[in-house]
Length: 94
Image (tube, rainbow, N blue to C red; front, side, top):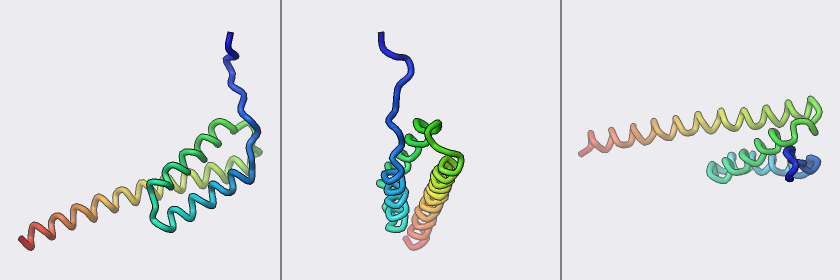
């Protein structure tokens, strides 16, 4: 019978820091699709490794993820509004 609780390897702080750095670089370059993937990886680490993180590590990782998702939501809204403006401008110019 399979074990009901899944064992996860210990968190790799270097990998996590690299993912956070990569997330920052991708957002800076406006590469939001790839950034979304990295944020998902970080979110998985947070959820799966919560018991292996000390309070400070957990808070930092949670803060980065929350900030990214908030920024991503703002970016989506801005993109939608920009598209709507462009459509209206094109309609007026027609």
